[in-house]
Image (cartoon, rainbow, N blue to C red; front, side, top):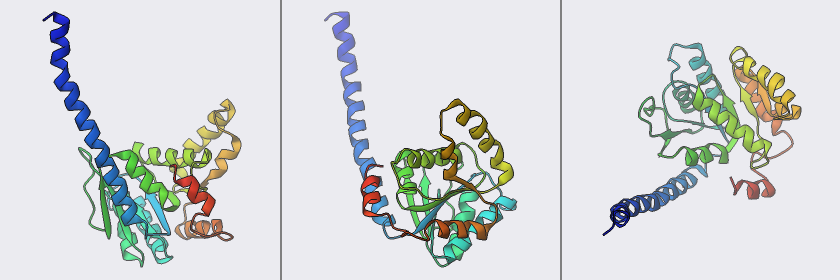
Length: 240
């Protein structure tokens, strides 16, 4: 056997093993979607709340997230968080203390992601992308507290989906004027000026610091429409 033949033969088992693993991974992904759809289809309306996993329990942002979640829960919104510590825990804690469901969409990570104990419904995901779909699909609004890369990722995700028309327009509320003002200024002074976004895209974002005002803003958005997606919006969201 030539050197080339030996080399090719040596790689065949590895290729086959890799392909088999990737094929079975497709079924794992399908299972995550099916489980998510089945468990979350009854939680409407809901609000997805995001923020740092590193926020301590005695931090003002933790207490603020808990208060916001409690008000939203008592107003009839199920609370959805990433299921971990920090702001996610505060959101689930406030949601569970209210009259609506508290949901955690947990992600398996090497560190920082330990499920909090305030979840009425707890789902676990291995894949970020399937978890993201669950955050968006059933969300009536997004409330974004101060956070890091993960929070920015979810914030950018919903902005992109709404901007491109891949999902319906929902309230996207940033909490913490001091924290977010630099990013919004950069959007205005760099992205808009460079033409990479339109000035009207900034209207997709609200910055609100008062918990009651956040609840009011969500109800104002739906004053003349249903919390549920219209038939046209539902059809659009099938392609998320």
